[in-house]
Image (cartoon, rainbow, N blue to C red):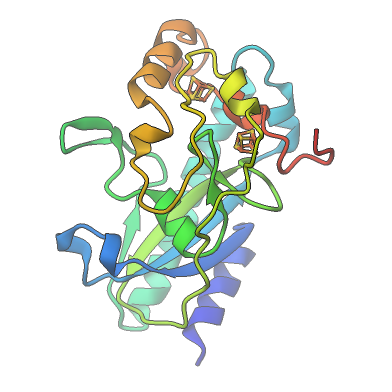
Length: 228
Ligand code: SF4
Ligand code: SF4
C-alpha cells in the first residue's frame, strides 16, 4: 500500500486544497523529534469573503476564519485516525491556538508555516503568512506530525515576494518589517506580533472580538486573478 498517496488522496477528498510531506526532525522541539514527518495541508479561503475586506475585517471573514479552522481540525483528525489505524504515531497541531512558548504568547506548539515550506506548499511572504503559487496567502494551514517515513516533497527555500511591498504598506499597525524570508529567519524579523495583536484588539473589538484582521492577506496580489 502507498500510505503517502492514500493519505494525500483522503485529505484532498475531505477538502484540502494542497497537501505535502516534509522532513522536520531538525526543526522540531526535542519532545516531538520522534514525529519527524510533517503532513501539511492548505485549505483555500473564499475569494469572495477576502475580496470584501476593505479598511477593516468583516463579520463574514471572522466567521469564515473560525469555520475553516474548525474544518481543518476535523480533516486533520481523520488523518490521525488513518495513520494510527496503520500503526503509526500521529499528532495534530491545532489549526489556530497560541500558547506561551519561551515567553511569547503569539506562537502555536509548532509553526504550520515551517511545516508547509518544508512540504513544498509555498514560501513565507513579507506578510509572515504562507504564500502559495495558486492561492497566494488566501489559505489556512493544518499540520500532522507523524513517525511515518515517506519520500519527502522538495522544500521551498526562497521567497518570490521580490520588490513587492503591498502587504507592508497595507498594514495599519506598521507591524510588517518588509524583510525577505529565508529558512531559519526569526519571526520577529518579519513581523512584530505584539503590534499586530494590539492593533486588532484595540481597533476591531466590534468584529470578531479583535482576533482577526486580514488586510495583509487581501492586499497580496498573489492568488488573485490579476497580478497587480
Ligand atoms: S493582520 Fe493586520 S495588523 Fe496584523 S500584520 Fe496583517 S495587516 Fe498588519
Ligand atoms: S503582498 Fe507582495 S510582499 Fe506581501 S506577501 Fe504578497 S507578494 Fe509578498
